Image (tube, rainbow, N blue to C red; front, side, top):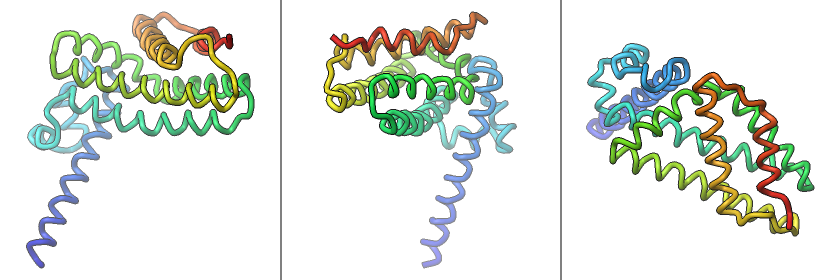
Length: 201
C-alpha cells in the first residue's frame, strides 16, 4: 500500500513538473520566439534544472509540439462551437472570422514561432514528421468541419473540403510569415480569402 502511494505521489509530481515546464516554455516562445528561447531559459523560467526538462521532453522542438498539439484541441472545439451557434452560411463565415481575430489577439506571439519551426522541420527528420503530423491533423479537422457544413447548409462549396482545408492552413502559415517580417495583414483578409474558397457552385 505504501509503495503504491509513493508511486502515485511520484507520478503526480512528475505530471506537475511537466505542466510547469510546458507553461514556462509557452510564455517564452510567445514572448521571444522559438529560436531565441533556449532550454536553459525554459528551465530557469519553470524553476527547475535543465535535467528536469529533459526528463519530460526530448528537446525544445518536442516541447513546442506538445504545446501546440494541446492548444489545437482547444482551438478546434472553440471554432466548432462558434460555427454551430449560427444558422446560415454568411453568419457561420462571420463566426469563423470573429474566431480568427480572437485567435490573433490571444495567440499573436505564435506567429513568430510557427515559421521558425517550419524552417527547422525542413532540416530535421524528427521535426519534419512531427510538423507534418500536426498539419495533417489540422487539415483533417477542417476537412471534416467543412464537409459537415456543406451537409448542414444543403450547399456545395466551390472547392472540395480537403482542398479548402489545405488552402486555409497555407493561408494561416503565410500570414504568420508576413507577421514575422513585420508585414501587417488586416484581420478581414483571412475571411475574404475564406469566402472565395467557399463560394457555392
